[in-house]
Image 1: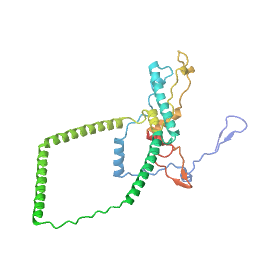
Image 2: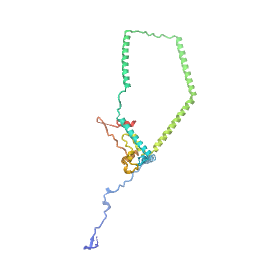
Image 3: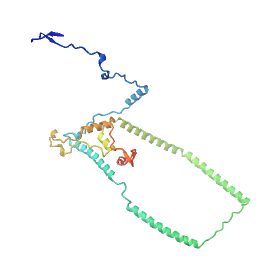
Image 4: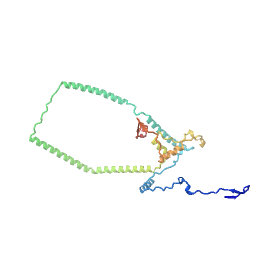
Length: 304
């Protein structure tokens, strides 16, 4: 196809013709997926609605403590330092408990008790040997008298005694039963009091359970981590009094604290969005793989 040129020696400029490619020549592998969404069953829809209705509220970004500011109030700053100090104290206690040996040996009281018991056993054994020697020298024989046949009067007397004992037991049982009937109101009062205490206790537990359920996920992340795993818990990012700089409190004089990546990861873990990688690897004992059990070595401090 030609068209007049704007100038020059060539009177006509050559332009290639553009022809669109047919739709059939386009590779279908580059097409967007057109698969229909899978149809959910009534059971799956019901489970999804139940999960959405009972889902706990989540807090994506927790508001930092006022004492963590670059120019905080003195009291608020001391409160933040106190929270950071509690986390470090809990970490030190866990490390001390982990490094402490299981047993420090027998105490002095136990040793004295064991030594005293050994001496007493030796003395008692000596006394028994002496008594055995004395008894071996003098052997006595006792004749067992055979019971003779009872007379009719004696048999009748035994029957009368047994009948009186049976009648006495019946009277005592009847008297005890009447006494229990008279004390029925006392037992009824005690049962009502116990039921009232149990109802109040159940009401209190229900209230605490509802408060815990209403608490949003992602709140109090540092305290929760410190309670679950105090050794691997990160430190609370708060500046010390000497690190705040001059009294002006400028941003250029503040020492950076904490890590944004750690903060976001811990928040996502607390909201059950991701799972932490287990620090302990596979447990292999004598060439055999052992499953990790609760209270294994290195995690005893979690039972404190």
